Length: 423
Ligand SMILES: *Cc1c(COP(=O)(O)O)cnc(C)c1O
Image 1 (cartoon, rainbow, N blue to C red):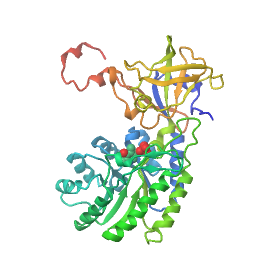
Image 2 (image 1 turned 90 degrees about the vertical axis):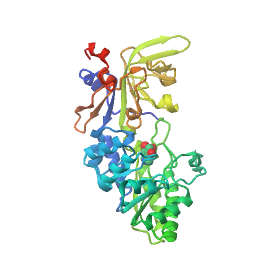
Image 3 (image 1 turned 180 degrees about the horizontal axis):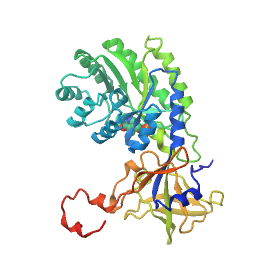
Image 4 (image 1 turned 180 degrees about the vertical axis):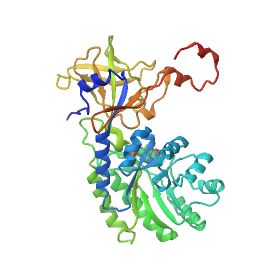
């Protein structure tokens, strides 16, 4: 299998006349079509809603596209809430799934009318202390502990994760919240990340549905929604099959019919908080080869670095690379494709078979639409790149300019030595 960029070399040559590399570019058409598929896959559940996990891509232009496609936002910090607020996404269109939450963030979330998803039982008195009367609708985050294993052998280890409450705490929390006047309850869990099996949501859903039935029975608390959170993965590697959202939706439906319907809980809404799946495949990092180096290995030095895309350095993540204009050339050269940080892990690819690369070639690094720009940092004083949007109508719009040294130094209020620079 191969991966095909959503943009051609000719288009990039045209774009770089206005916007120099490196930059991330996003594909509006792809984002919209995928969001519609998600909605369709869960259309059997009338209350279904996707709350886009803002941390995956904080660009307001992209969040606006998703809002137009019916999505809410899933926020976990003050600034994420501010972005949502600024886009007129408030009330129950906002899920606040935070942890170790500062008081002012709870206050703000409550002012926005966001659905608050409590990460811990001790947050009940903490929140009550801040907001006075608890909101009518509250969600609790569940951590089943142990190990989750799918039939393809993929495992994750919720028992080792800092998030959520134990099962016993869930019962206790529901009882306490009910005694304090909370009327509508949600259950949330996130137990595996970047899963590439259509089984993950159904397996999780079954656990949460069974818990919901029991919680409602034992505490008499009315469960109105179940939030499957994020974790649906994308196929970063061309040999991976990728997820089929229709199969995932059908798998969740089956569990719903097996567990919730017989318990008389057929009104429960299904929520998701996907980030990666919503935007990941619809972004690419465009970078130019600026050096070729031959020592013990062959290196291609590019003008982007881990500041623009840290996943390979941080998680040894694979991101596919297409050399634009050389899509059909033989992949007979072995390269390390590297950025300029003073860190030997600043490598977009290691021992990757690629076509012969010349200085000036444009590389399209795939699947940078989620957890890439937003995960970036400023090591070595390197500046974060621009973000562009390839619109539905084929036009290209700058949706975030590249950082300048002024941005990097902006927090050094009044430090006089910088005044001599003309930024
Ligand atoms: C990170 C996160 C998400 C989104 O995860 P993806 O893997 O990007 O889908 C959703 N909800 C919570 C609480 C998260 O922490």
